[in-house]
Image (cartoon, rainbow, N blue to C red; front, side, top):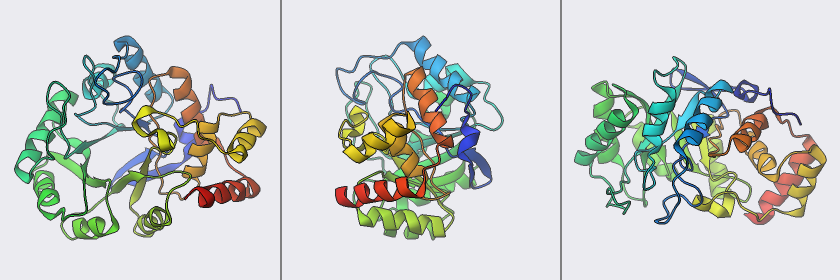
Length: 302
């Protein structure tokens, strides 16, 4: 599979509210450092390399970038790298960010933001990105409790013009229903990939029925989570990758994209070659036999 000229347009499109994005996007979590995200001893990534990756992503048609103010290492901040690399921003570029969690300047995690503190987190993203409004803001949720007060606070900022669209991250189905009673929800960001639980599979389906974009994280990393791509590949995944002449990561990502037209992938990397491979995955169409094999692997791992 040649990947040099394949762009994100090959993945098809979906709408986040009134914003059309290609289904292959870019996640900025891994951009500020080498190795595990949020690790205290993580080595900061070379600034010029990070900027090259971001600019190359846009050249390859990526117009959906996922970020957060708490994506930073000792010397690098994802939002500031995005600003440095891409401002003035292309008209079609959609930048989605997350609020809720926070880290102090030394990198230590803070308690989740209160409804009153969410405005400060939104303003922090605005300052770092150099924008006067945010395209999409996802409320990242910890636990199963009500999101009404916090989502309501973001809905007020949406009404004030600081936010264009709202989403949710790391949630349960009841959170989506609760939030939709307050303001429109354009996307759900949840962990998903080969081996996801039946409950996660069902939630992905429900989002599709409601025309809510489902944006999986760790679809490549799997059990590697913050540390990066998993090495725990089944023989079946390896065999399909070998036959296709692609990486096992590309097969995992392609399977995830095949779960529905509303699925938007945001694989992250600081490596230009991996970026090219990730974008090229959007053109990879798995056969019925390949999908059946991967579905079997998925159900066995769930």
